Length: 332
Image 1 (tube, rainbow, N blue to C red):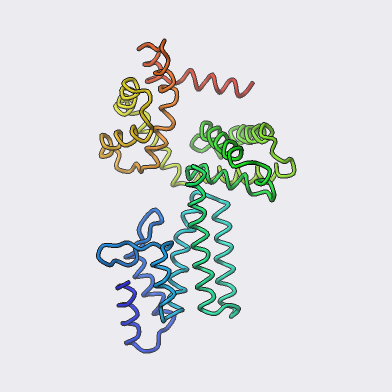
Image 2 (cartoon, rainbow, N blue to C red; image 1 turned 120 degrees about the vertical axis):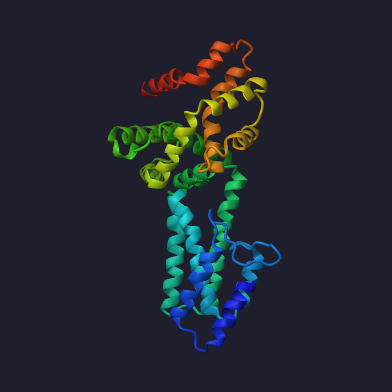
């Protein structure tokens, strides 16, 4: 908490604190303190990191004498967290954006005191934390959780299923959409129409309440639109480069031949260790997607007693015929 104490001390020495002073100081503090991927390292004490979601940090915020400074600090940190949702989860992004805007609006109108708005913002931080904990509890990836929330958006729908049923629906939906996802798909009406048909069929398969179909479909497609963002297209280009790298494919292939039961996590770790420097822009989640996309067919073939080198090599280098067959079967 030393950074904040020094900041407050300097401001106090100046006498009256203006809004411009607060904004400038907060901006300077955050520029030095906010790290990527939503992890916020604001205050350093003997090497310890504090997060917006940690109890120790929240206690320090509550103890700050300059309450308006605490409000501004929380606002900036929450906006950083919400910005992460804007890139990954349309439902949670809208939810927390609306909550933040409402709290700040009531604060500016004088309907909330400094202390009250601080509690509102800290409560919001707790809700964001619970959302992440729910993903872990359900065993969902970030991408799957986004579609889980999209499917949950119509009121009352979630209660119609058990956790296992809804997670199964979410995973099958995510896999189908991801398998048919291409760069610039959103500019091709035929691709968008195909995705909509797939969503409708899946909702019907899982007996999704008819009154929620339209909203669910609309929200799912809005979530798919996140794939059209420039950042996502950059990721797709990175993935294509790695997928075309025969060295990477050889490593995964050989490891699966030796041990078809090796976990995706172990494969991912080994591939990152060997080829991480070759692809410095690849993040953990990118490597995870590569492994998740490539291994299923090879792993299944390696487990068959009748598997032979020719068949395995066709899967290793070709992998064209099987996806094409799947495509044809879906059209039928």
